[in-house]
Amino acid sequence: MEDEVKKPLNFIEEIVESGIRDGINDGRIQTRFPPEPNGYLHIGHAKAICMDFGIAQKYNGVCNLRFDDTNPTKEDVEYIDSIQEDIKWLGFQWANVYYASDYFQKLWDLAEYLIKQGKAYVDEQSAEEIAKQKGTPTEAGKESPFRNRPIEENIALFHKMNSGKIAEGSMVLRAKIDMASSNMHFRDPIMYRIITSHMHHRTGTKWKAYPMYDFAHGQSDYFEGVTHSICTLEFVVHRPLYDWFIDQFADSAYRPHQYEFNRLNITYTVMSKRKMLQLVQEGLVAGWDDPRMPTICGLRRRGYTPEAIKNFITKIGYTKYEGTIDISMLEAAAREELKPIATRVCAIFEPIKLVITNYPEGKTETLTSENNPEVEDTGTREITFSRELYIERGDFMENAPKDFYRLTPNGREVRLKSAYIIQCTECIKNEAGKITEIHCTFDPTSKSGTEGGNRKVKSTINWVEIGSCVPAEVRLYDRLFSIEDPSGSNEDFRNLLNKDSLCVIKNCKVEPYLKTAKALDHFQFLKQGYFTVDKDSKPESLIFNRTVSLKDNWAKKA
Image (cartoon, rainbow, N blue to C red; front, side, top):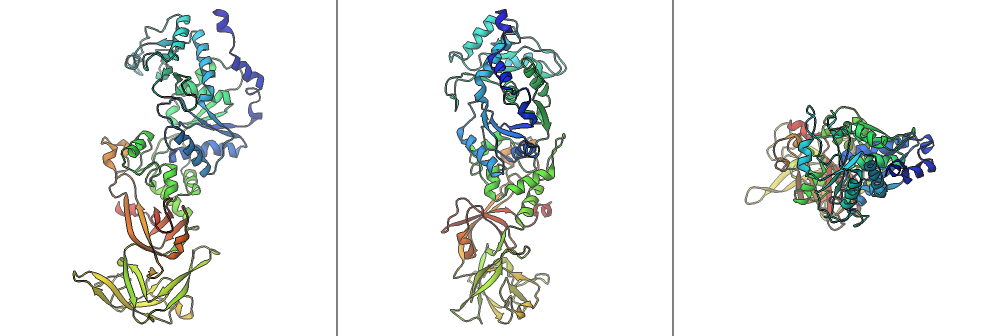
């Protein structure tokens, strides 16, 4: 047994012989992005992705994608596919795809090696008993009654853990370190636990004992040649254990080093995958890609671009201090990115009929409207004009105050966007007294783009032509939660959902130009906000999602 303990493991010899540890990566930096495939990526992961892939890009290094698939009870191929899609959409490409399960045999061999060194043992206590014996940060823990069982017995029991004949929770493998350490993670941490209730998505039923994150992560970094293992700040206290495991078998100058930065917290948002899964499973949102969710696929469906997300992350930076970022900064990044690329169009949310009584019946004409007047060379499009139009109901007021500069019956003139100047002559009401139709006259010499079109009026209103406009459904999204810090509240986070986070407008009228718009095309609905075409939109049933309003409306509410 003594000779067997001292014999180096074959995979360590193989690593040395392959030169991975000597002159690692020819001196280049190597990082990895290591998501657990138990949910969809969110914007906090986007921050980590920008760090992991960004460092490798900047220094001509390597960044690999490694799935931390050590817990088959929560993992799914659906999540693996979505993670890869999101990384590519953000504009990054991994050098290689790895899985922690690639190393299950190596990790198992290493665990056996530590048992034979007298540095690991099988514990048959319950999780509650182990937790109780760990003590507190100011009080030493108590040793397990199984801590000093013979090496041969530990090896036999360790193999038994993977036999499929031992119930979950009845045995664990623990590292033997120091039950009196001031670092609670050193108090004989669990290395392996039994999982028999779920089959692994890659290894099937081969394994019943699975490594814990703290054991698998550092070793996986070492096997792959990672130089910079970047984590969030909660892993600072894990770093000594990360190093301890590697020190038990690594004997060269090469060591992966763990670095930590602050995680991303955003107001009016939850960043817990567990809570997001609850929202999805309980039908409180319409799925992982619900545009109100902070998931990357949700932000994509809402109309955020990769550049907007990356610019936001660049602005907030990386620090060693935890904090919370105001969601208005993310929204501002979206506006800044969309402003030069979104085509300006008219969309009427609450249409009311407008009749130009002195315009010839049956006549139509083609006018020209700029696609984006703030950016040169974005072109123009043709719009149809006729006697009957739709305007926004809120752009007309029968008894208007002096500071209302839109359409009223008091003789004030307004301009129809990219068209003519009009003034109201009367409004028609139904039996209930509701205005159903507005009558106006137009100045035929005031056509936009002509000499008479330079005449100035105080207001311009939007419109669409009744005969050619297209119906659409518009979804106005707002912040998912009603308070700034839903995760910090003592109340159930599901009771803090913003009841006004989604408003659906069914009777919207839009320009026919939008009929050929494709999913994720970007538009500015004039005076309404920035919108994108939803993935479920079709030419015969258009659907638009509001990405952000034109201004921060919550600042006014505050």
